[in-house]
Image (cartoon, rainbow, N blue to C red; front, side):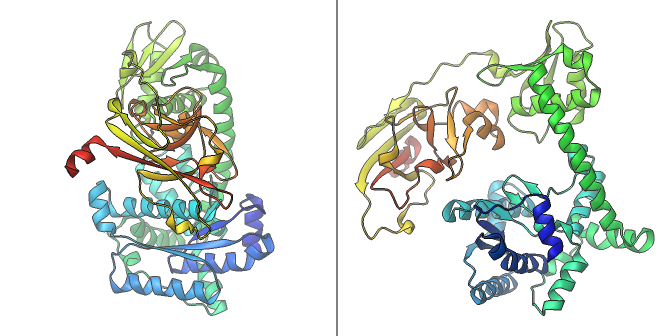
Length: 472
């Protein structure tokens, strides 16, 4: 327990104002995490809430795991949120593998509970063996420095307190305490890549090469993480020094001085960041594309290169300019439509109608009354300053991302959500001045949510013209 406590302190995982949301599947790793938090949270002065996702894949076994987690949380009076989903159906609908879709659904569940309960940190039960598997997987597929760093102990609000333990230590901890846990039979199925690494590769390394192979791999990822963080800071400094962008912001000029003065490793890191920002995502941007842009610095003015996501890089006198091809054609600005409150506002160029109504919050109000629909939201009407309107994005827009009031530029939010640059101007926003209240179907501002101080509720409902036509 002291080992985990020291690890939490080393990476500053938890502060006194935090509320931890913990993923508890019922397996050995997550049960260990449960008891670690149960023991450490009171001393740290923070509450924690458990989340269990039943994917509906394993029938009675999945129901058994859910019942086990319910019993565990009930026994120790730990709040629990359970999600039951049809993973197979959702994965087909989203055209994702079961593994990818499962990860996304769990992440969505954690984020929902954070929003509901005021959670600030999300604790996951990854340990050293998971990290070793990730390192081997990344190496085998091909990776850069980021992939060699493995699983990060802290990544935004996600924390992994058990990364200082290996699987044997976790099982020994539970055995010593006499605690039960569930076993997922699919973890033995070597059809999955991770399971092959877990059962066929790592045991050979530990038996035939070095019994401490997992620990040594984790030590390397920690060292590389430090190197990576240092290089990221250097990259940020170089980006500010050598890259110019406009307010759109989709056009980037990388000055030729970057290539002339800085080492190639730093040039490639800056160029990767430029391409990801211009595209709004990173998935299909590889080393070959970065190399191609780097080569442009050696070529004459006017030479160009086509890139993924309909981007283009062009050699100019000042350096290399990167932009989505559609940015070369100016788009007509969409007007802002002030919302009629109460009333109906038709938005013809967005193909939708906005319905607004205001009503008082009653004495017997329950948070369960708040609609969870994608296109119907409730807001604290009294704290909205500038009369709201519906419009497309504008320079200077920002959105509150947590109840503490931390704000993020809308540009940065789009980038973090990996929304392609070409789609951003078409996304409607409910705005009050430069404050974004709601990005319909995607994100609501944390600053205007209903609270105990709310007196009047503003309901905004958006109906797309296609949906209205279907009703007729």
